[in-house]
Length: 284
Ligand SMILES: Cc1cc2nc3c(=O)[nH]c(=O)nc-3n(C[C@H](O)[C@H](O)[C@H](O)COP(=O)(O)OP(=O)(O)OC[C@H]3O[C@@H](n4cnc5c(N)ncnc54)[C@H](O)[C@@H]3O)c2cc1C
Image (cartoon, rainbow, N blue to C red; front, side):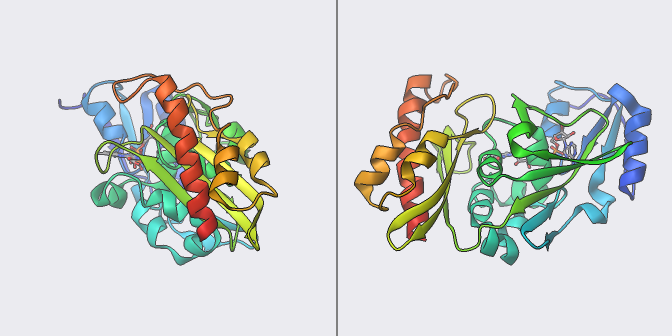
């Protein structure tokens, strides 16, 4: 379908974008890569009167080293995050997960911030961001504020962003030297995950000293598997020990039932994927 008619602006600064957003009110919508927004408009699930394209705001794009964190601009395309050496060295889990987002075409247009702001529970970037304690820097008319990952994802397609705010960058604390893996389960290549598991571990000798585990599509938001994290610490990185820790991965989850599988299937699947993700992370 063709979208309903809308006005289009492409401001050159964050300030101009915020002014356009304030003027447009409820009838305005931010556009990043357009990879999720345009299908929504074409299906007429949303019909904003004004689309504000962030594509000309250079300050929103790029990756930088900020001491104890790697900072990824909201408008940085997935393909740039995927190949960035800082991201790879200090936040390997993000490199691993972003490589699993869709296909090269979508990764070329879609953005890191757009995917997180969209907050699709099957999106591949929420669980790694949550597992690594990312912080979301947000600009509004009153200035900027920072939202912790624990508070950012509120519900299905809903974040803590207010209607008049723009996500500007995502700060990811460095975990240099940690192993990481993103285990995504799909029926055919380049699909959204039925379930996926993001794991990052720090191994000393053959013992897991620290662990972070995030779950994709096991509820209306990305989830942390805290009981698995706690069970892993102090354990050897062996199949038996990791399998035992992974057994509690579905604890506290509320997975959906759909044509790809019912909730019980996903509860079983997540234990299998957690074991695979943690063992693969520990090898690196
Ligand atoms: C065929 C296809 C397959 C895909 N497969 C996957 C997949 O397997 N895994 C996966 O994770 N994703 C997948 N995606 C989605 C992809 O990751 C998109 O890039 C992402 O969902 C949206 O990013 P975007 O930059 O295109 O944002 P847009 O579509 O432009 O925006 C998405 C939403 O976020 C809001 N928004 C965007 N940027 C900001 C900002 N800076 N501040 C405030 N609000 C903002 C917009 O207003 C809109 O509501 C797929 C998309 C397509 C088309």
